[in-house]
Length: 327
Length: 209
View: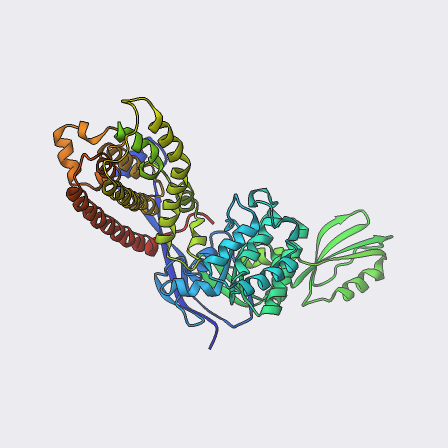
């Protein structure tokens, strides 16, 4: 049986609406109009122990809502969630001892007190015994490089430092599952790499199951191969990131810089995007024509000086994916 | 005079209008999500947070006020309690009063879950409660009709009761009866608070992100 089972999950929100203006503001005192938004619409998936799963989708797709239901904060309207034998919204207090949560946009540390004091508070909240606390703390300090600012109040930390502390705080009680909701939001390149490396490490070392959401595709590429794509509350795709890449990456752009062109060739399976004085940008349909064939055809008619192959970045792939599903 | 001095000394313990900015902010901007990821009962967690905020403030404030009041010339000074028995009863009533006020303030926090704004509910409770608790104006000075109303509401049990026990304005038996009433009110308010909290959490939507 899977570690995390989600079946036919639904959640609807009422969103109050009113037209702008003073008169309409008064009207809304008497009669409020609202529309219902299906934030999560019949979603099902299973996750095994020790997996890292990325949960992606555009803004407002229902990612955070799903995470909030998985962590027991929100109660689903209907459907089943079973995680390690618990139903989160019902056995909330017992269940949350097994999970760690980081919401990238919110802070769980106490603003005015040093990081270490925040950790001590969490130790008491989770009733961690001294020995285990010391051990886990040392380990996290080491892995996340927290030593220099452990005694600094949280309000004086940089975002990158704070995020590392947030992640450490969510792991003090040795949870079996870690939920990361946009853990790298707003971080600089170095911090991002550090956070990623760390996530990978704890997954391998401690066998923590990790569910993360992110808009940064490089995060996801670095961390996991399994992605669940969600849009307008519906599950659109569940599978390997590589498969999406293959599916949407059937076109490559090739830039050829040449000298002395006799006559411009028409090569099947390619399309000219831009043509300059000794430079041409082609789009090659990889399933019809290989790149080397294209180069060979061109070398017949001109002297090639340079070739650049521009691979579709993962961001472009995702944009195409969202476009296909009309998101 | 006792009335004013004791109210002043224990101001932080008994004043209704002490807001839990942190808690209200958490509800408004959604950080409350983290609280719900932790293995504790949110009602009691906030209850203790509120109570300790009051005692922390009170500890800083009460000693200088009491010292000053004791050494002022007559008739402006604070008199010692009427008897040791009354003093013990005063302490009990004061402690229960702080529980009572915390239970009332918890209702403000919980109602904010439904309204996302605490201004409306808190101004109603602060105004009505302030007047009927005897902190704004000593209760014996209120008109009789208002005084009648205070009998049926919990507000006078917050501080008025304790202070009047101290000064001997109320006899011991009446004091003990009122303390029992205090306990009943505390239990009722906690039950209401917990039921509302349960309802709030089952239909809560977390704000933002």
